[in-house]
Image 1: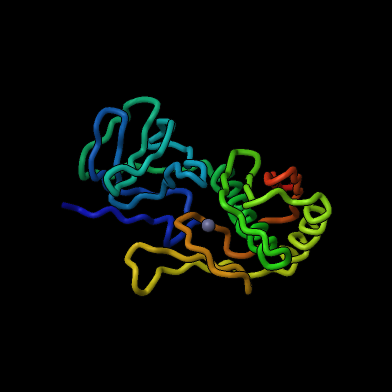
Image 2: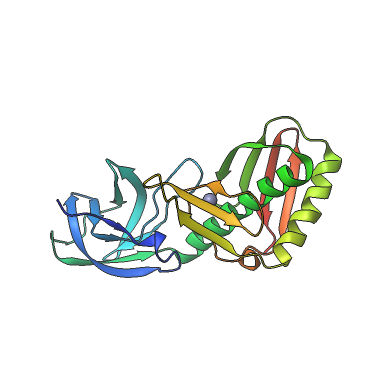
Length: 208
Ligand SMILES: [Zn+2]
């Protein structure tokens, strides 16, 4: 059985790749070297195309990433096909996802309030905290988060040495968080953020 390489963990900035087709079934394709990131609880799936046919969804099934297309491309098993991802969507997804880590990390560091859930949408990210947060704290958080981002902290991801397939993300000197998502490499790529908190819910948007 041929293995699938998840290329996005080696290079999250690669937006185009020719790779042999591992398997296909109608409009569903699996690549040996896959660059499409699947839909997860915390992140949006990549869009893009395979041999020019638009991608509808990307899912992880039985340990493999399967790309669902809007039509049936002319491809054959073991032959190469061209994967192309929608770069703006990928980059915004990585920026928003990284922003959630920063906001959650600073909230915990400065105010001792833990985030219990995070989700990325096309135009915003959301965090849910363990308890309602006073408006004053949200105001202070926005300043602290933007100051942290402006100070150009490295975002590092690494595999756990003991647990196979377990990945960590560490931003600057914030607590490392277990995460299988995709991140930009430095907080300067996130840019300035707009925070809107209400009760235990926080919405985060990119200013540009
Ligand atoms: Zn992450």
